[in-house]
Image (tube, rainbow, N blue to C red; front, side, top):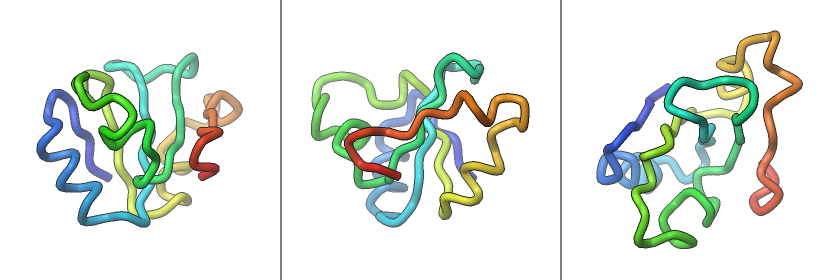
Length: 89
């Protein structure tokens, strides 16, 4: 697991090196009201859809596997994790 906050360059390098990875987008202090799981290739979190905004102003927690991403979410929040409708993780 790697977390990127205010580090778009590092985040984009991670995405390029891990195209089969997964990313959870969250608020700066993760909470169940906003947790979204994406594939690393998803255009909504890789700079294609929003090329002018800071990607990591919302933290990106990156994982090598879907199972690792799901295990990161606290058990009591498990029902709150959204799955992106664009990349179908």
